[in-house]
Image (cartoon, rainbow, N blue to C red; front, side):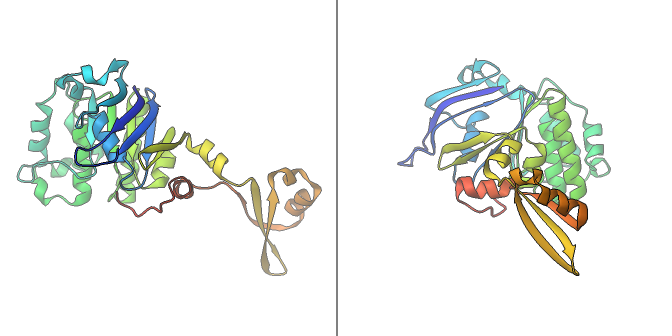
Length: 285
């Protein structure tokens, strides 16, 4: 869906490039995570891809066509859900959605989306009276109004309770399952791990890693198995190398001891984030 080659970008008032020659592809039907610390170039890259910023160096193709060749019809193809909800606070939710819907040729049904996200009963309430979580959910409805081919989602579950977060993730998965493509940025690594087919880590304007969460965990994790078992009313922990789990010692331990837990040395995306970027997650970009 997107092919980016040697993209370079510099803000007019900056002396250094913000984006320093990055390459990546986003396949159709893929949920692609784009991760990195504050100031690494995530938001800039997203703004370039949605044509809010113009780039001078590099190539970007959307649906096999040069991105620069698209006029405003490009926005018929995409839906954008920024982290900060965009709405008119003095209009009702329904008035907001009806206004935005008129900007597009293709129209999704509003009621099913609002019902699923728990907003239908409050459709005639002023958006200014909505909670943060309600505004975030309304933002997702707005992004889906034009039946887009591609969704850009920035922190789509940030500020949501577990129930509504689950609903939002189900909608994202269904969108991709039905052929849609998703560009996702988030600091909630569990969501990224759960949703994304592949992830890219950007740091200091350069792509440091691109792969599936599984492959990255294998690459950065330890090839160990830790067994915790009970002996003489104490919990004992023993670590085995992966090659050692075929040995008699491991087999005897599993068969003869009161096993409490068994863990592989698989790492987490959060640990990989810190390792690759050298920056700890702080929750907000």
